[in-house]
Length: 454
Ligand code: UD1
Ligand code: CA
Image 1 (cartoon, protein in one colour):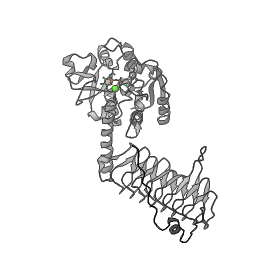
Image 2 (spheres, helix red, strand yellow; image 1 turned 120 degrees about the vertical axis):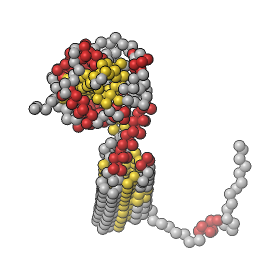
Image 3 (tube, helix red, strand yellow; image 1 turned 90 degrees about the vertical axis):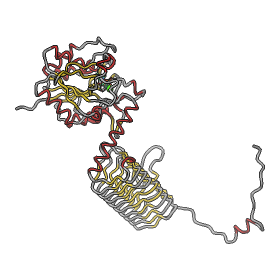
Image 4 (cartoon, protein in one colour; image 1 turned 135 degrees about the horizontal axis):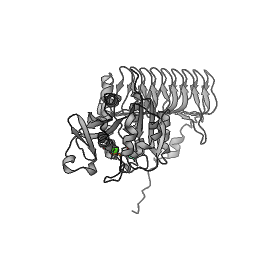
């Protein structure tokens, strides 16, 4: 049998007024990536043949996020947010191209799993024209209620339009629906706007399909999977759920999290074997930690690759483009950005290493700063293998320190230093015997008493 084709439509045009934010709702982040990114990842993993995202007027940032995440997806603009069915019809051209299954997901419902999306499609393959994800939330307020009879779905009633008895129903609309491609347009075109909000509700698809003698079914899932995010409070709850899942997955994979509840992960954080993460560590997007590495407390990592048995922190800040080689060490109050710190190299205290390469085995003394920015441009610092940079040195980029070179403490290095050379760039020390004693005179100078007028 030929595999069924599938068009996924992700709705992201709503104004998200309840977020009280200048940023489009679907660009708010959970577990280090946007709500939209979570949905698109699930859609992509489901194995769809085409994808469309419906965005609002002027939501260029949303279009850019789609382009970044799923370049094959087409964006359609919904001129005015007139409801979820109206939004789906903004992607009419994509629907007209034809697909066996049309999967509709909401951009503000980030946790749906690909397996669940496949269950919805399976319901279509089994003959239903409409399949809806249902769940039983602890608090159903705000969700549409699913009215069922036996194993058939009769209607979905929006919270604002529901009667008191309908409102008492615990089974709610998870906001993800599958429509049989053959009937989708006919169903969508029949949806009206006669309801309390005066919007075109996608949820009316169920009653309309039944009126056309077509079948509708509900597929039930856990609340966490269909948690919709409309407010900042729900965003925070979703973050808690996501973190819980990510921590469990990390523990399950063998990572030692000493105090899991204090470690914050991103959806894409990757760990090797025997990694130890001490309490209070934050992993932003795109971090990979290889086997045996230790991340000490209070470290903050984004876009960093930590090599085998490397050690980070406590109190380290590793920014995008940081790469630590095997056994490298970055200690307390060290910041690194676009920096490769090769195997066995160390920067253990109070340093900034930016736009730099630190060769294997090199030692960066406390307080060393790569002066990478001249106010206009960024420049690179190259430090050779086994070089020694004395404490409190400023390396004014662009500059290259050769392999095995030695920089005296407190130097300001503005010119390249050849391999094996010693470089000193500091004022020479002057010692004047007995001068301090003489300056003080016979008695040590006491502080003059000053009477404050306060
Ligand atoms: C919707 C459902 C409700 C369900 C809930 C699940 C409808 C009418 N209601 O309610 O039954 O329980 O989701 O979370 O479908 N959008 C557009 N254009 C619009 C309106 C919305 O693109 O004109 C997008 C939004 O960006 C959002 C999604 O559709 O991603 C859902 O819209 P929202 O207003 O949040 O619907 P709910 O009131 O939560
Ligand atoms: Ca919603």
